[in-house]
Image (cartoon, rainbow, N blue to C red; front, side, top):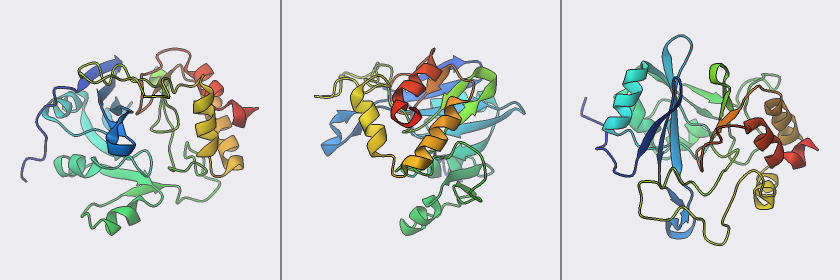
Length: 244
């Protein structure tokens, strides 16, 4: 198999957030011409059985692979919503035995793009009574994951905490989002955004309430700085419109 791993990126920040949980953070622009400094992040977790799970949202570089391999055997490659899937094929080529798990509609999307990628499972295609952190009412079909051992909530677009200073800490570009400034759980703009992209309000209320019942202290999101403490309060503040 030809080498699929990218060369190291000078702006990539690799960090062990807590025991068995590593993040891979770097600049990422959204909006017109990519001018909005959103930042991007992958998260790798060593599970209780020794296997490794990775929410893959950044390129698989040589140093990323080294950090993942030091954790254990990568068994699960996760696309946490319908838009965070650009690099999962790169991971799958390097780790062919790993299972690729996405959300409802990802298999169809990959087939339409004529990507030769096997999607082993999709959140959202199970019976309605199936219980897990899948937000069916969210525009991007996001999934919330809880790492029980470290009380860490891991999400893609369900929460933002901008500006992403860590993600831009090795970049000459500013992490400050023009005009918006801050987009964090306490900001009124963040609450309005979550309300707007919640397409099914009843489903959003149900799932936001379910997550608020979990035991977590930390939140790792794809866009913005990790919330190291007070994560439960941050979640309830961000989703106050759904939880009131």
